[in-house]
Length: 526
Ligand code: HEM
Ligand code: SF4
Ligand code: SF4
Picture 1 (spheres, protein in one colour):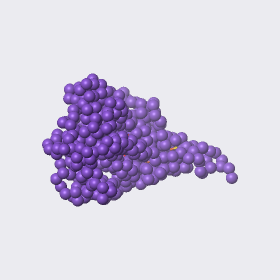
Picture 2: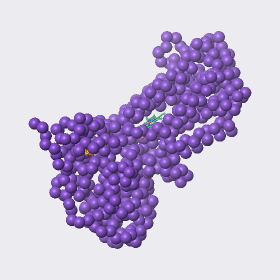
Picture 3: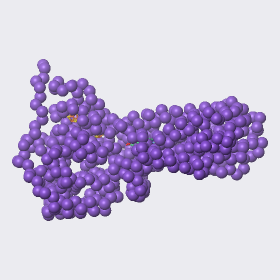
Picture 4: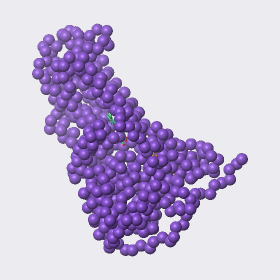
């Protein structure tokens, strides 16, 4: 499994890099797959409502009503029909890419099982809704789809009488059955939408809207395709004649030839196994899980920064329980916490300058503590030499830091770059542990912990707490959001940074350490 994931991850990384040369970072379609899924959902909904106005829901006139839209009213209803078709195809593409990408990035295991498991029925429903849509056109393809899928369903003893009988002869098919199909075609996507809402319950601020420029370009592309290559029907269905050769849609119907040729026991068995494996995947070995974040109320003033910065809804602010003079305290839900450390990075008490008291912030990762981080930074700085000493902070899912380490470049890896409190940058620069600080990690908009890069950029820009202090010269800090395959790009950024540092104005260093003790407590009522 790990090898497959590694292989897929490298493939995605390559495609993201190539697309990054064409699109600005925020527009990269590969980094907006979930949001694009929603976007296509809305296009399908609006175009579906419009097409429904013209659609004759009776089996005898359905084909003609769609022909009318396609040919007589091609300029509006026809375009809407094409938009409906192409947005549905695009939804399949982005959904499957999103699924494989989440797998490749190892974001489906441990406490992240929830989004994966709730995604599985959505995937099934999107396929079923699309397949049922092909019935409604009632052309040769619809006839083929109807017969193959009802025969397949009839292999399970779920219906009182075989539903494939409806398609034996023209007289057998009632409009009532057809109306049932339309109901399914509308109801299933609505249920899927409700499950999508559940799908996002464990992520905070989910990105459900693609950047406007990307959305407009994609929409213009779909309109262009609809004009140049409008969606057309095949010959009308005729239940008196076997459909014969039909042109298949390879987005929704790629498995239909298998359903037709393999025995039902094999195809049902394979489908059930695949679904079970998908649902079980988050719990398959190797299982390793870092311990969740832990709150230390003695160092917490209830400021709620950790609550605001947690990307996985894992922190709640509740009434203070220890009698301290603060209204609230954070509590961590261990079954939501992915141990990314963004909370510790946001805590005002994550202060490396504290010397007299322990470096024990209000919230911390037990497997990757702030005290350990300070020790690592100090140790790494010890060996640095040269006129441009650089301390690189990276993350476990970014470029391999060992490859850039040298006598003038020290490296420290974190759970996520968002775990780094800006005070540590201040500490490195003002304590003269290095001449400059380079921050690296995942690609921009593609942070494994969702918001690590965004929060870091905002902290550096001094628009998000904890802000980088003004006394740290901005020219001594660089960022290189290059992703796991970005070692060469990071090396290039480091060489450029080193030559800039050699010419940078000198800075006056801090006075000897002044301990920053925790806030004094108000007396506690007996
Ligand atoms: C129409 C289909 C789908 C849509 C529109 C959709 C949309 C989304 C969105 C918007 C997010 C949040 C992304 C973010 O802000 O970081 C997300 C997360 C996720 N999705 Fe989906 N999704 C769909 C189907 C699926 C399927 C089929 C699976 C897998 C079976 C899946 C697995 C996941 C996982 C694992 C995450 C969580 C990533 C994390 O831990 O940060 N999704 N999805
Ligand atoms: S470690 Fe990450 S997921 Fe866990 S509480 Fe902190 S910010 Fe939230
Ligand atoms: S950020 Fe730190 S001080 Fe603020 S509420 Fe969270 S743990 Fe407490």
